[in-house]
Image (cartoon, rainbow, N blue to C red; front, side, top):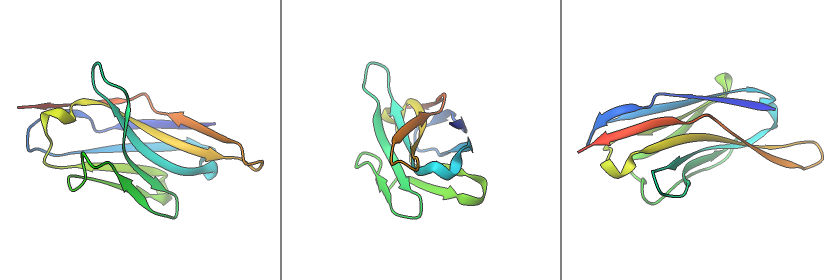
Length: 120
């Protein structure tokens, strides 16, 4: 089991910045990748950014150049730095962790979500 706790959301004006944090605990050695998703009211959850442990990152086109994902391995924490925020970035942001066990079985874990609201 992996537990994820997000923090850092809030209300910000358009053009502002926020940094989200996601701290993982539990069987963190099983984590193969972590990422951020978001879900706006009435819309499907979408991937925003992801990072493969020991590997590459991926950023959605809609936020490329404005959002950056990074990781502090020692603290098992992933960050999402968001700058030049737009009202359309308003959503609940969820942290996600993908795990693989010794038998190759995959699982996913989600945080509770943190609200980001961008006013125009």
